[in-house]
Amino acid sequence: MVVDEYVQARPAAALGAYVESYSGYRQRGVAPMRHLGLPSPYLTMILTLDEPLVMAAHPDPGQRPGSYDALVGGLHLTPAVIVHDGRQSGVQVALRPLGCRALLGVPAAELAGLDVDAAAVLGEAAVAGIRERLCSAPDWPSRFALLDDAFRARLAENPVRPEITYAYQRIVRGTPVRNVAAEVGWSDRHLTNRFRAEVGLRPKETARVARFDRARRALHPGALIAEVAAAHGYADQSHLVREFRALAGCTPSEWIADQFDFIQAVRLQPAHDGAHD
Image (cartoon, rainbow, N blue to C red):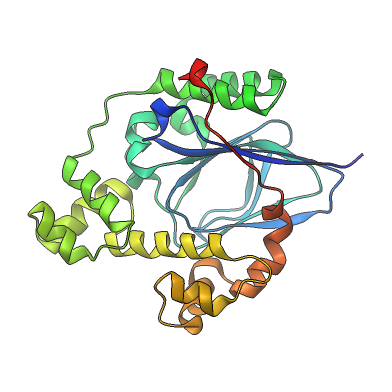
C-alpha cells in the first residue's frame, strides 16, 4: 500500500512571532528519494515519528553524514541532502530566527551552518516526550496542536534588541543595509556585527537567502525562469541561475525536475482554531 501525505499548517496565533509553519509528512511504499534542504530564512526542526532522518550531507562539509530521531538545523548558505528508502515520517517546524532564543534558549547564531541533535538543545527527556505524544496522536491537526502546547510551555522572555528586530524585518524585505543602519542609528559595521551575533548570517547574506527563497517558491513546471528572475529583483535569468548553483548546487530547471513531486503534495491549512490559542 502506498502512503504519501504532506500537510502544512500555521501555528497558533500566540506563536506566530516565533514559528512560521508546521509540515507533517508520511510516506510508505514510494520510490527512494534524495531531497535537498535549501537555504531559507528559517531554522529547521524535524521530529521523526518512525524511521530516523538520514542526512547524506550537511551544509557544513565538516559534519559527517548521520541519522537523527530529532534534529535542529541552523540558517545556512549551502544545501543539506536528505535521503530515504521509500519510508519516512515526521513533523518539520520552520522556526523564525528571532524566535530562537524564546523557544530554544539560544540565539540562532549558535546554530548557524550546523545540524545538531535536538536533544542537545532541548534535552533528551523533552524530545522523547514530544515524539511519544506525536506518535500517539490520531491525525495531523492533533500533532500540530501538540506542538503548539509544547512550544507555549517553553516560551521565555525574548531578549532580542529592538534594533535587531526592526533591522531583520526590513532586511528580509530587501531594504539596503546602509538604509537600515541609518534608520536604527548604527554604523553599517555595528549593525552587521550585532545582526550576525543574533541571527548567524550577515544582513546581506540574510537578504540574499530571503530573496532566493521567494524566487524558489515561485518556480514550478511551466514557469518561465526569466520572469521569475525579473519579478524577484535578479538582473536576468543568468543571475538567478548563478544564485541557484551557489545556494542549491543545481540550476532552477534541475531543481524543479528533481523536487516537484515532493512539492506537489503540499496542502496549506489555516491556523488552528481559537481552542488552541
